[in-house]
Length: 129
Image 1 (spheres, rainbow, N blue to C red):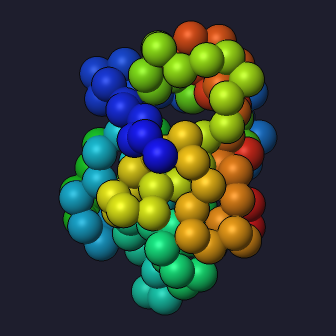
Image 2 (image 1 turned 135 degrees about the vertical axis):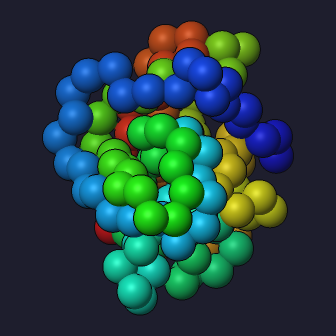
C-alpha cells in the first residue's frame, strides 16, 4: 500500500467534467484531496476506513477553507498526481490519510475505485456514490 502524492500547484481538472458539485468546506481542503459532503452539506475529507467516510466522494479542484465555495469533481479527468505511477493503475481513497489517495484498495470495499491513471500525472476520476 503506497500513498499517491498530488502536486498541489499542478492539481486541476483538465477536461471531460461530467459530474461536479460546489459546496462550502467545513475544514481546510487542499487541491486534489478526496472529499465528501457531510450531514450539513459541507465538504469534509473522505477516508476509506469506514463506510460513513467513504461515500459520495469527489476530488477537490482547488484549495479552499471554510466560507469559500469549492467545486468537487466526481467524474472527469484530473492532473497533478504522481507521474511515477504506471498507466492503467487504479487509484483509491486512502485508509490511513483523510483526503488522501492510495494505490491499494481501502478497508471498506464499497468505497472502491475512485479513478485510474490514463497517462503520467493524469487520472480519470470516477468516484462511486
